[in-house]
Image 1 (tube, helix red, strand yellow):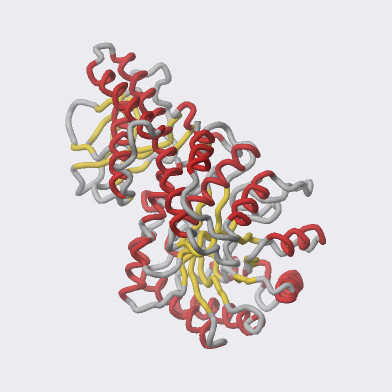
Image 2 (image 1 turned 90 degrees about the vertical axis):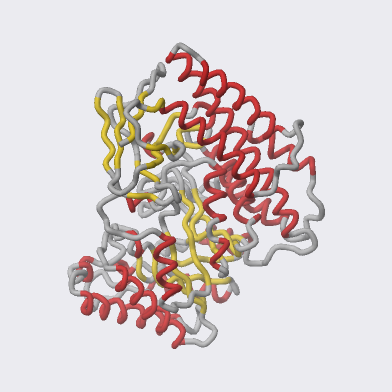
Length: 501
C-alpha cells in the first residue's frame, strides 16, 4: 500500500476526481483508492510499486490529470505535492531524450523554466516546515508544466517543418464530423469552401429506431451532397459501443447471446454498406468496442465483430478502406468494473488474429466525462507517440475541447474553458498532431452544436449559428500547410513560446 498526504493551504478534497493507479510499465490497473482524514491510500493486488493519477489544481497550468512517479510501498505517507512535481520534472528529461532535444541551450525558454522548477523543487526537499514544502512543490509543479508545454510546442514546430519542408500537406488534412440532423445552407457552404473531409456518423438507433423500421432521409441527403462536392467521406461508426444508445435497445438486449447479437450487427452493417457502398469507400466500422462501457463482450467476440464487419465492407467494394476507433486515449476505463481491455492490448490481439485495418482512429477529446478530463500538451503528445509502432496511418478521429466549462470535475487547460482557450488549445493540438509523420488527418469533433455531442459546446459553429474562433485558427493552419513550410522559422517558434506564457 502507498499513502499520500498534503500540508498545502488547499487540503486534499474529500472526494478524488478520476483517481486511478498506473503500473511500472505505464498501464492503467485496477486497485483500491480511499481517502480518510486527508490521507489517500492506494493498493493493487500483485503490484508492489504504483503511481497515482488524479485531477489536480496546477495553478496557471490549469486543472489537469497529473500523476506521481512509480513509488514503492512504505509505512510513511508520501507528500503528494512533492511526488507530482518530481514526476513532472523527470518527465521533462525523459521526453527531451525521446524527442532528441538535449541540444537546446540554456537560453531556451523551456529549459529555463525547467531549471527554475528544479531549483525550487530542491528547496522544497530541504524545507523543514511542511506547509512551506508543499507550497514550494506546487510552484515547482506549475513551472515544470509550463516548461513541458514549451518543450512540446518546440518539438512540434521542428517536426512540422521537417515533415513539410519540401512538400505540402495532403489535401485531406482537416475534416469535421457532421451530425446529419441539420442540412442548412450556411453549414454546407462552410464545408464546401473550407473542409477537406466530411465524417458522417451513422447512429444505428436513428437509422433503425425500431426493429425493421428505417429512417434514411437525413443521411441520404448528406451523402448525396458530399459526393456531388467531391468531398472525401468517412462513414461511421456503423457500430458505436461508446455512446449510450449507440446500439439500439432492442439489439442491446441480446448482448449476452453473442450469436444473436452478432447476426443483428452483421445485418445492419451489410444493409448500410449495400445502400451507400457506391458513394463511400472509407468506413469506420466500430467505435469504443474495447471499453465494455455500454455493451459487455468478451475480447474474442470483440475481435470477431471487427473481422466480420471488415469483411462485409471489403466484399462490397474492392477499394474500400476500413478503420476502427479508440475512444479513451488514456484507458481510464480499465480501472473501473467494465472488464474492458486497453487499446494497446486490443490492437495487439487484432494483430495476432490477423485482422487487417487500413487506418486507426483515435479520439482526442478533453473537458468532458468518461476519460476526457483535461491533460497537458506533453501528455497528449507523448500518448500519440505510442501509436508509432503500428505501421498503419493514424487518424485523429475526434479532436475537440469545449468553449465553456461544462463541469469543474472535468478540468480545464490553463484557465477555465472559453472560446479563446478553445482556440489556443485547438491550434496547438492541430500542430502537435500533424507534426507526427504517422498522422494522416485530423477531424474536429463537430461541425455545429447539438444535443448529442460527446463534449458540449466544442463545435466549430455555436447553437446561434456563429462560427467560433477555433475554426479560423484551424483553417489558417491548414492553409499554411498547402505549400511547403521550408526550414523552421525561429519567429514562429518564439510566437508559440509566447502563447504558452
